[in-house]
Figure (cartoon, rainbow, N blue to C red):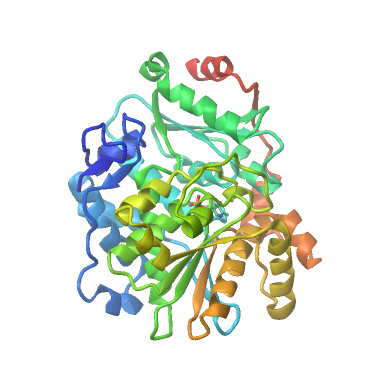
Length: 430
Ligand SMILES: *Cc1c(COP(=O)(O)O)cnc(C)c1O
C-alpha cells in the first residue's frame, strides 16, 4: 500500500515512512492510494473471530510488507488486548464501550498500535527517538501509556496548565521512566503551536530525532477501524446498526467510514458534535467553515477545524450528496449533554460521560425519526475521566476503578514551561 498526501505536493510513501513522518513534507495528511475490500465471507464470519484476528485481517493490507506477518499479528493482539463490549442501554440503543484500555479512553487503541509500530521501526536505529506530542487531555495519556518502557523512545508531552482533569493529569505526569511532561502556562493551542514549531526547527531535528504522535498519523488513524468490526461481531440483530460517533478531530468517525467503504455493513452514521460543529454545519449547508474552538463539557471534542475532515471528503470523492445520505450531523449543547447524562442514569442506571452523552443524544434523535432502526453509540471514555460533569448530572460520585487508584497515589512530576518556543527549544536541546 502506498500513501499520498492530500496536498498532492509530496511523493507517495509506504506505511513505514508515513507512520514515522506523521505528516507529509507538504503539510498534508497521508491517505491510502486504494481502499482494500474486506475478504469475502469476513462479515459473516465475524462472530467467530477474535478481536486480534479481526485487527490483523483489516490492517494487514495497509501495513503491507513493512512489518513481517508474525510481528504484525503480535502488535494487533496487543492493540486490542482489553474488552470492547457492546452493552445494551435501552431496547434500541447500545454502547460500544471503548474505555477498558489502560488509560480509560478509546485513544488507547490507536496509541497502542502506533507505539508498537514505531517501536518496531526504530528497533535497529542507534539514536533514540523523541516522540513530541501536544495534548488537550486524553491523547497524551494514551501515548504515554503506549510508549511506557519502550527502549530507544523518549516521550515529551506538552499539556495546558489547569485545563486537564485530575485523572488525566496523573496519566501524563506520574508515569516516570521514559515519559516527561511539560506543563505549559497557556492553552492547548499554545501547546500545539510549540510542537509544530519544533518540527520546523531543522537544527533541533538534527540534534534529536523527533517523531510526532498526533492523531493524523496513519498508524493511529487506521487501527480505529477495528472496533467497528468488533462491535458488529457482537451485534445480535439481522439489520445493521446506525452508529453514532462523538467527534472532535474526526479521526474516529473517519476510520468508521473507511471500514464501511471496505464493506463493513452500517445502516447510517451520526456525527455528534458539541458547539464546535463545523462538520454538522457542512452536512446541512454543503459549505465548510472552520471557526475558533469554544470550550465545552466534552472538551476532547473542542476542535474548530477538524484535521480529518479532508480525509472524509477524499473518501467520498468530494461528493456532498453521497456523504449527506450516509451521515447525519448533530450539534449538542452542554445543557442537553448534562440533561442526557441525568435522564439516561435515571431511566436505565447507565452512567454516560459527556462525550458519550453527545453521541447518545444524536443517536436517540435519529432513531426517533427512524423507528424501524437500532443503533450503537461509541462511549469513548470512562466517566471517571470527567467526574465533575458526571457527578453534577447524576448526583452520584464516580467510583475510581481499582486500576487507577494506584496511579492516583503516585507523585506528579512535571516541568513548568512558559508558552514560548525558546523555552521548549532549550528544554529539548539538553
Ligand atoms: C479524542 C476524543 C474524542 C474525539 O475523537 P476524534 O477522533 O478527535 O473525533 C471523543 N471522545 C473522547 C473521550 C476523546 O478523548
